[in-house]
Length: 275
Image 1 (cartoon, rainbow, N blue to C red):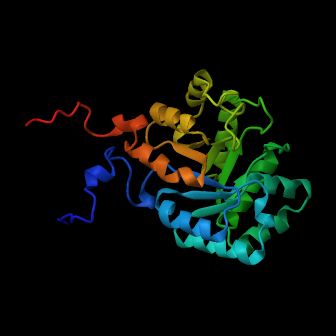
Image 2: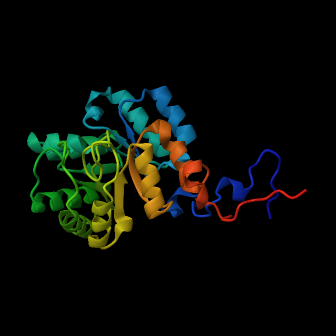
Image 3: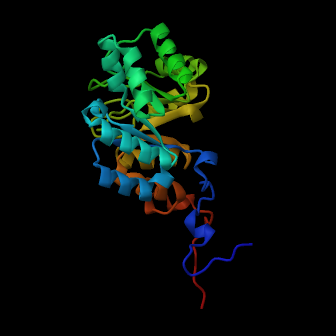
């Protein structure tokens, strides 16, 4: 048995919940971070500190094409060296669909070194057949495929029946996860009202309709949303569109190392110090 030194934390203190595996590949409860334009030094710092607690990094919207090729390759290399899935935002694929250049888009992301692909129709319309073919093409190219359900327009809310149908079809086509849209704002879209609060009835209906809710990732950029979903669905719920600055704070909440979810810890009874 390994004996902890004064320079190590006790295992029970590292994860009071007892539910967060230290090995990224064996744990559940994925975290997807949205990168809206971190420079190379900030990104390197983020990956070194937050990387062990993050699974997927999305280069937001269409920002990937605004990097110099050298900087983009370096950033992707850094992410993959730390075991991260990194993908361009789904809006960039939508632009490629609109420009009728999907093939060259996929060629480019593979050449640059992306290992993930987000397929969405938040701004455009994709018929079911095209969506399925895009999923299969991404998988054929060796990419980790995440799809997204929902529109980006303000007031576009979750339709539980539509979500269930989309998720079933996407997962059957081979998608690894289906993400529920909430944009980077988390307000007045998806599950959330104009104040960013979760519409509980919509959440419960969605969970009842979807066959395997463990394959859903909920975009939840705001702390109140993360706390709510953790409390409702447990420490291993998949959460996305997390700010890089919040990656450690979210992992702390998952483990019961923050007041909001302190009850996730093993000890449920109040501790009384006896002299």
